[in-house]
Length: 70
Image 1: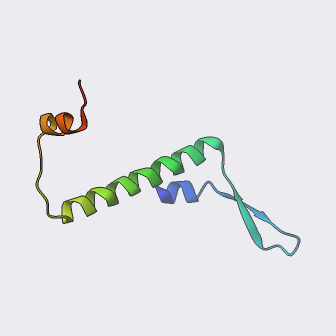
Image 2 (image 1 turned 180 degrees about the horizontal axis):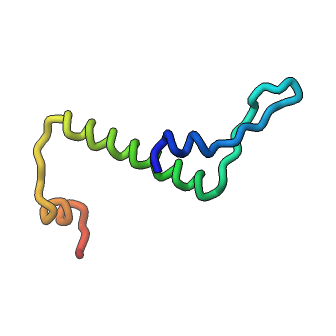
Image 3 (image 1 turned 120 degrees about the vertical axis):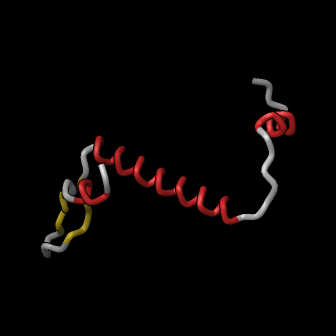
């Protein structure tokens, strides 16, 4: 589900003056929203990592440096 589809499922809570004061989502929609946000955050981190100039190392070297045995 994308952000537009999720936004169409939101219910608004209004205060005594009729102004929107909160939103109501089902638990399923909330979890989908969190997943969408995490995916966007991951994509941004990947974009930033690609912009950094640095030396890539092999998985074997990374495991050795971190002391990981797989």
